[in-house]
Image (cartoon, rainbow, N blue to C red):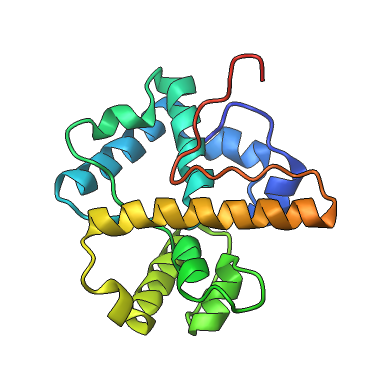
Length: 194
């Protein structure tokens, strides 16, 4: 997709996609946003949860891009059937909360023995996130197996909020002025003054 805005050098360094390449080969954002939202809505209608690593980032980005290019919020697509999300980062942090170390996709893949070939490629990252989620499910089956997708979705919102409060408290104790958003899987709109 050609985002229609300048591509930061940091993004090119991670994904290898230059602004020139995206302008030459990328599709316009509006139809791409529609197709993504439609695909997610189809999953919601059959009751199938979707795996989204660090959901507040990706789903909030999708929501804002839908608003920018389609004048439509992400929530509009789920008025008749809710979208259930499985976030391997939230699941792992809750179910194995005392384990030291980072919880990036690369770290989770290493911890759960999941191959991650072509990191930062959208397809490779999506497959890896799915496999990590499956590995978490196998490892913690006794704690997860009785939960329906809707229940697990709701619990993750609660778990993420608790994780955010804990991180916020740690920042405060460390003297770091950093705000941690407790919203999951989608961050709310900022006030107009922000």
